[in-house]
Length: 269
Image (cartoon, one colour):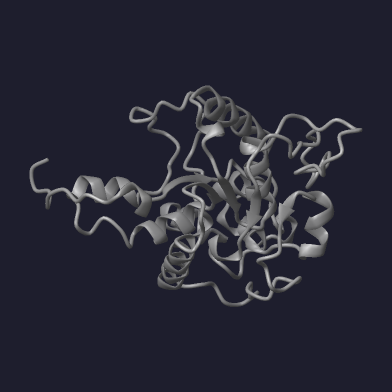
């Protein structure tokens, strides 16, 4: 490609394949797109998936199984919020859980107002919750997590052992994490991934986290590649994807970007 800086080769044993998944549509995306002030609503605390979100999960699950990806994943890492854990177990988990199977479910029935059957942990990779890949921290209740002791009964087969505090001590009601702080946290997360033995890892996280983390990459690439690496997932252009799932209408952006895109709604009386 014209303007590129050339190619680089790496031995395969020094490489990892990361499958980056932004959570499916949450109820906060639906309400916040109509009125940005809704992101401040306590009713959206730890927002769960919307009905369309669960439909997206089902479509993506079919896709990862059809293309063979489901059998390649060594580890699933998820942000410890309802919408990301629901997405993670729905896409990469086992089939519907059946009583009498002597393994803990990844998700119990109706976890987080999901109106969804329990999901088995049979024949699927291990799942681990990691605090570092959370969304922008602070101010918006939708980005505040529950206590880990609340999550464990809902997601029995997810490993929460890497999370040090039971309560959410990172989220502050009056301080929103800066973009550069999210990017720095993202790089620490990427560096931590290199300490893992797994080679093919699925990461279920958030659009804002992905955008600011990936903005650290691609500086040695052609500008069009750099743009592709760190663009926000608008959910409207599927021309460069083989994913057949239903795409939500509207921006479906993280709350901070939704405010930038719709300032007139954000400041409406």
